[in-house]
Amino acid sequence: MVPSIAIICREIKMSTVREWAASQNSRVLKAVAVNNRGKWKTTTQMTALTILLATRDSSLTGLGVLVASGVVLLYVSAGLAIWSFAVYMRKIWRVLLE
Image (cartoon, rainbow, N blue to C red):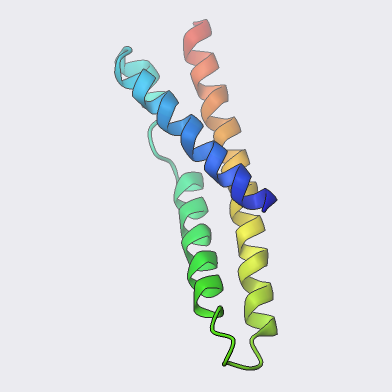
């Protein structure tokens, strides 16, 4: 539940920030351009969700390790989400303070 909340909050905040940046100058927009951290976050997030959704079938057995790996990837994705959000915010503050 906690990683999901972190990921959702980050997505809402970044969407808002990117929309705002689009109305500003190109330096601000460049500060929120997609980077590798965001791509890694998305990759781990989609992999975790795929694993967790695929293992919901209760008729399958021996999925404990697979479910655990999906949960771990979800937490990794949440960590990457928070980290990438902090990096984006730092870049924006640098541009705004110049």
